[in-house]
Amino acid sequence: MTMKDAGLIPVTIKTVNINGEGNISLQIVAQQEGLLPAYSPGAHIDVFIPELGTRQYSLCTENSSREYYEICVKLAENSAGGSHFIHHYLRPGDNLTISAPRNHFPLPGAGRYLLFAGGIGITPLLAMAEFIAEQQIEFELHYYISDTRQIAFSSRLNTPALAGHVFLHCSAANDSLRDKTPPGLLLADQNTRVMACGPDGFIQRLQDIMQEHHWPAGNLSFERFSNANLNNGTDGQEFHIQLNSTGQRYLISPNQTIAEVLLSARVDIMLSCEQGICGSCITDVIDGIPDHRDCVLTDEEKAANTQITLCCSRSKSPVLVLDL
Image: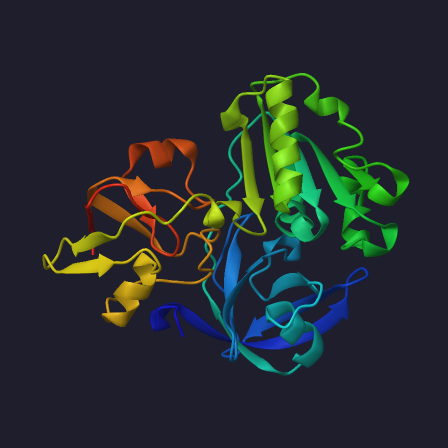
């Protein structure tokens, strides 16, 4: 298990329900009863899957209830991993282990919001939309799917608070982000924040549209399903990691990750997705220049070179001193 034991929460599955074609929703409660930790819209939990390790799922609990958590999982095509296990083996009454919520996709303050969900990317954005509606701030939620049968959270999307703000787009009807640009994106607005969650191609298309219409890059926050940077470029030369606390150095070869080497040396680190998309392993850098390959740190944070994701990023300098 790669999550720190102190952060684990034993839970029990309360309900399992179909939530649109190919999706199931799980409600989970604490085994010891009582309230689960509070969280803010955009947060996720790690779910420990037996034999497979941890998988990350956004929390989409209605009204941010602490009596239970809800996650919605899409069955990945040809999956033999986390989604396959959850869809085919989990039942009400089964026990699981999860982490406390973490939020690397927080909702920033703004006068107006445009939310863009690609498929199961609706999960964090639904929680954001409901929160924004409660604050009576102007917003639009654009939900992109292949077919209407795939709609998740239909009843929640049709509540009075959201109904007038939700726009459904189906690629089967030639209404994808590539086919049509929503009017709200045609004019850049400094006071509008754009939040997006979806596949790599969906996020890239949204970035291209915003660049074309001169939106400030900082007005977009997004969360991807996977990290397209993992295979960009070569791993380069070997380098050393040095622990600031002890001065101990470890050699990182071109075919090793920093996390792999540190875990083999029994250095206590947090590790979860191993793709640079969840932020669990972010560590402060004392000295050296990281080679950033994650999708979590902002451009400003990467430019500062004061943090690194241990699971996928590397080093441009011969030695990287970490705050460990």
